[in-house]
Figure 1 (cartoon, rainbow, N blue to C red):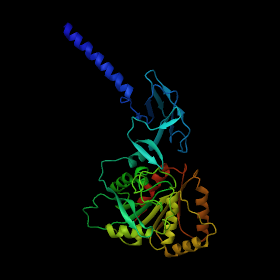
Figure 2: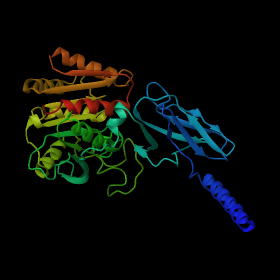
Figure 3: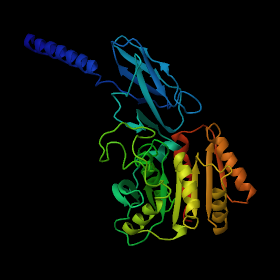
Figure 4: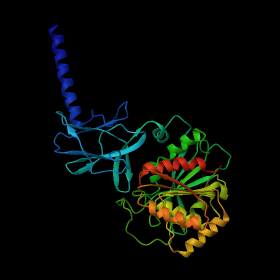
Length: 383
């Protein structure tokens, strides 16, 4: 009996030491912890820190990150913050430890936006169900390369094909989906949750099966940072380097030709759509008028699209109007910094009877809006 007692005592000491070591390493920290009421607790083990702040896009009503909210420290050196009740959505956050921004070491789900890295989590519900991986047939996502004679280089591109594409003998319509400034061919997949949104919409019968082609819209860039021959450069809104041979819009014919030569797609206007956010919205505006009889569906999400007194732009819009199309969809948030630019563009369109559909939302120039715009735009295509 005495021997058994000694063994049990030794085991308890060992377990205690092991638990302390685990806590010291942070491996027992649960963060984020999503509660039944949809509030979220974030935790960080940092016993030597003097101040820890959480910055997150759920701290303000407009969805923009703020300087942050201070976390509280318990006796074990674990800092905590519990959010208000959150609506269903995908959220991001960082910690700032004594002035240094870091990602949550307990959360493996990380995204890059230009040069910023942050953690993400999803609150289930209406939007969350759309953005998460569900038990539905899944499409395929391929990162591959195409040659652009106009730009004089091979360029990386991301292509989503719907479930069943590889086994099908059918031809499919194509949505060309363009990113914003600082983004690349990864942005719509990682930040936009494109494959999850399309998988779920197609499985629900809300969208028809389609290819989604996600280009790199930076004409000066071969591929996303770290994926090009120039090595592991620091991501930026605009990388230093030589001036490209042509604009992205001028080179877009190379993308269409490559897709239609390499994928089983319908090579008709009624089976092509182009849409994009911010800079990509501006690209969509320019591409659709530069190729005025190529796309039946156009989507401008918080678009950097300006008309002004440019007579060439006005003439091309008139030609696009006269050629006709099925849907020209404009969406923008009320607090978006491009809100007035979109209003000005629509005012001119009204003056020439250019048909469009306008969707105004709350909030600003954020992915929270653009994911929703995609989820609303895709079901309207190719009907």
